[in-house]
Length: 456
Length: 147
Image (cartoon, rainbow over all chains, first blue to last red; front, side):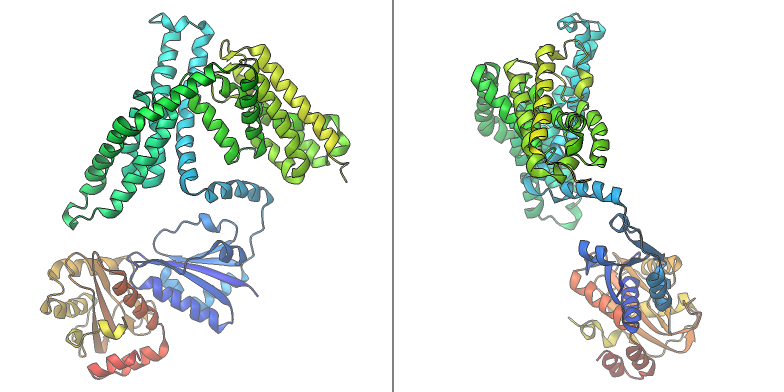
């Protein structure tokens, strides 16, 4: 039995929304067809369609004078009618919806959908943190690469005023990197409390960076600013005539004062203490400790290939760039490159252990690997997780550990192999390349040992 | 809250005199002014007519539900009106309208009232209720139509 769904909505949302809903329900009942109608009227959304409703439906009827987002329905057939039509000719519309050809499932769409769902299922603090990180990243990438470009003229060239090297350093170090922590904090707060959260978040982040609390301070400031604003938004009730002042004046001012004073008098000192201790520890890190940290960061990059654990390691390393610590960044990028690279190499060395489509995908994995897109390993890991994941984790851990032990540094947070030729962007380039190669080979060999013969 | 709770005998006109759309809406606004529910006749008429211009609220089957949301409305209210000879309302079925519900909603209404209004809209799609309303001759009949 075909199921139908519908959405009704009209400009004032008082009458037609509901009459159209009633008319469609009656017409469907008469024909013995199951229908669920979502109404978007003045009371808000009622009888909301769930993911499941949409998936099971043969077609959706959209009867709306007002604009309705069709994003949700991109995988099913859509019948769009004027709202008046739904009231007047509901029988015909139900017939049309029953007879419309169902939209075919597109395989390619479902892959992007999985990725999107991953984003959508992020909730709570993790979602807010990731939102902040995603807004910060372009600054780090642009800034980091501008700094790297400045080093083309020599590592000290920027100290000569008036030179291009100095200008590039001003763009990257002076402007972009200075904005990193404020933007991180600002958009964490924005994600929590929407627009009124942005200003207090930016301010809190700026203070964190001024008092040397670094990205840790920025994260703390962002969460305080966001939750403070959201809380104030809920508890402050104003007379109607003053309501307009709330988002523009009252919320930003009060929450900025709260986050600012807390940062300066309470939280700032301990956090900058932790940050300093961590920075010093990382700078003095040699031998076994460096090996361990690199190994852990490397393993984290590979274990969920772009998931939360990967992002945690990456965020840690990127955040440290703001405190002039460059070794972990080198380790995480190298370790994030080896999973696709190792798989690509394995598809060449052990052709009998991969299916034809996988061997084809191996070619793309080279490109994804050298571009530092760890997600390139996902299709392989999804097909055979218990053999693939240990192999890539082992390779990445070795790569991360070697990169740290060699003391390789990286000033750009992204770019894969393409930043390596920039002179001075990578410290100890030779050691860095060796660590990437070793991890790639280890992953490939382990795959050769662990993976079973593929059934073609 | 039920539809009956929002219907009001003071807000019923069983013998509408008007013969044009604008006139009938004006006539339906009158009791709202008298009861102090609408404070500005011209402004509210304009709001309702603007809604009509977007698309007619004459839903056919002899029924029209002009409505408006405005800050000159102090409380949600429904005015019931009936015309013996019918009014040309540019209805969807191009037939005259005999039954009118003028719905007045303040700019900020609580959900409870809006829910009642949405119920009214749904009920009017029910043939029995429409028949009862067309047959109604007293204010009591109008209340009972929704039983």
